[in-house]
Image (cartoon, rainbow, N blue to C red; front, top):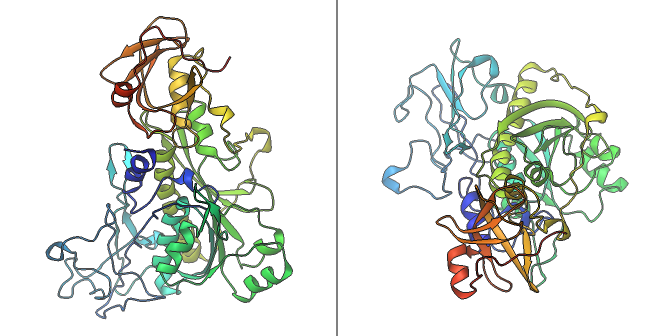
Length: 453
């Protein structure tokens, strides 16, 4: 199984998709992430029609595939929603379920977890304190939002906001040549937005008076920016009534920049999170509105962690918008301490070269950080071999020495202990289990792999 197919499986928890590092520039080769909008149910006897401006009527499915007709839930798209207490709704009168409920009414919230990763969030169940109470987004109408985003990472937020608010415009990067065939393809956000029937804009320039004027005419409540790929000027940020909110996959001010997740893994950090930030003109330097921290699993790589943080960020953003809509008052904004800021620039191929002199734990972190693109590598003669899916075992041998094939993969000695690579990729070949690669390209024990010197 190739690297794209392997990482695509990790995105199936969110829907259809390919790994995000194939789309950092807004490109996607052959698939896109489908994130069904989460349901919101209105209290009262009337049915709620499905359609633009109304709450969605479909429940999320973890695999992005509709269930068999006999197993479909009562609440489903194009059929409308029956109110609690009415025939066809299993909830008693006095309850409202939804992904965005009034925080003042919340009794509890459940988030499903599987194997240490956040799966598609379950619906929130809120107990009503009195008859006729409904979530703030339904009491005051949906917020008007202009959404900026390009890669797969932005899709959970787009799907969540589309389910509860009015997205008046989606702004994404224009088509550019990509892939081996250099075909021009739209971004994943553009593909998904058009599926949802949303208006899409792909401006070549965002610093023009005409673009700012177009946004101002929309009279948006918020701009929401998720991995758009360009720094927006003050003239654009000021076009929405409450400015612009951004989802950033790190605990700012740590790891400002376009590649925070790989840098987090590269440095072996055990905790990360997402930040909801009020944007200014500087890169990732705006005031912090909310942060959600999470523990990094030793098995997570850049793809799987970014996938999980995309969902965490979408949920946190939804809560911020709901709370501000309910109260009518902005949540506190906390300025960042610039003295604590660290940078996370784009990764380069040269950076991916393995330094076997480091400890096995550090080498494993290196492999996880560079897992998808460009892939951590070392040399056997002139052949550049990539290594993935690392583990650590005790061993003592000169750094870079091949110790042989174990049950977990190919073992290579490091400065301390040894790293076991479960998958490999030979030049011109596909990413495969190490055992399969070594059948066609055997590497004798005591061979020394050349890394960073």
